[in-house]
Image (cartoon, rainbow, N blue to C red; front, side):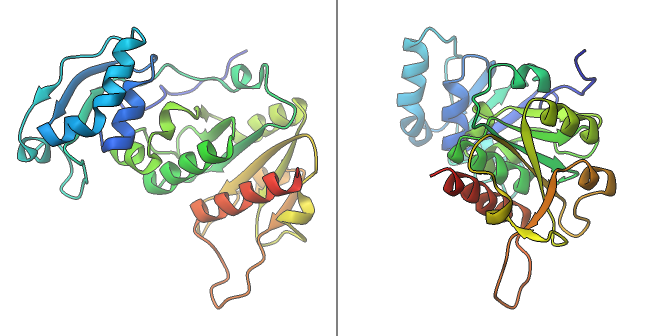
Length: 256
């Protein structure tokens, strides 16, 4: 049975902005784009992606040429839009059981326990795409929507790495273990380092909590092991997105 979850992404309309986010959206055949607002300079930066989408038979709206200030008025004051903005619809829901079907035996999944900051989640999606992670699983009620801010930070990764929203992360971890995943919770209470806890073969789920609160008790109890990232400087912990990058690197290194 498929899990109950909210819709994947922000309510429509959502405004994606920035060269990388808009290029990736243009080239994703599953992404419906309602409007494309650009300056002349902005269009030059995404022209190749726009042409490639049309050549691949992907329907795309004619660009609407505007002034930079027109885009400014539609976005948050601090948005660095780089003269391009796409009015997009959310992608279709993605279910954990769908992700698990057909995964490679060395697949990696990231599980986020109540990580709510869109910049952190966007950065983790970008890292997940760079290291080939199969999905990012989040808790339904405590995760950000796929907004322009998150998509910009993810630098196009929202079109490549599914973000799966689960009501019950403990149950999701059970499903991952049933599918052959070793679930490693990143926690300063861990007795092993990430390098020691990572198996040389097989599927791995990296489970990470919000900064400050860390992993909730039931989530930690549903991990196979807890591991820490050793530090040697005066600051003992990493930002959750930086920790995700280091942990994913350790998984890759363990398999070489």
